[in-house]
Image 1 (cartoon, rainbow, N blue to C red):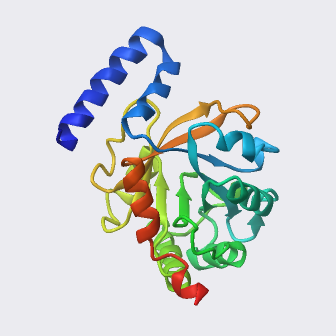
Image 2 (image 1 turned 45 degrees about the horizontal axis):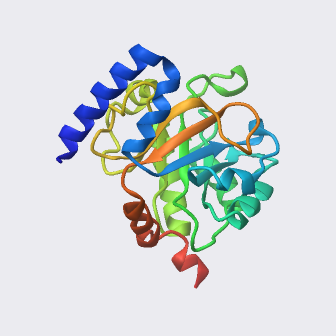
Length: 242
């Protein structure tokens, strides 16, 4: 079955399911892609990673840093515990508009583990308002590119860019076409960056054993076998570890 036809079927099934059963039906959409993950931060509190690893979750992205100086207080503990539980683990940085890309990359790289089995890093670009109410005279596209270049130079691979439709339309305008993306789309498979998204955040109010309260749920664009190939083919951290 072609990818276009597969996506068309997914859209029809999801539309019928949502209209019939409501928002919870979106959980069934994950079956079309097969590899489920979560993205978390300190907002999720203490996570029982062993319990979570016994669900359908296979990977976890953990918030590491934000802006030029913030470090998520749960990052190191989550990283160690998630790896011990057998999950594929990656780190993400939350982009802000009032620090340069170079400053933010420095903050991120200072805490980023360089385990050779780590997933590619992620730059979370969704915040549209200036930090702390201050006006920011910075070009988001330029600063995102600076962040990508700095991280790539250090760890040997480009970060995946997490984007919302609003941020992409307002600040990127379809540019950065050579990059890989993580698309947020809570009702249907992503219509933005249709040829270049790797991960899809399909829910921001999911539920999984081991996490109290809502958690973001994501899928990898491919089969479990393709996910394993994706992990092994990554060039991230290999030169750093030598």
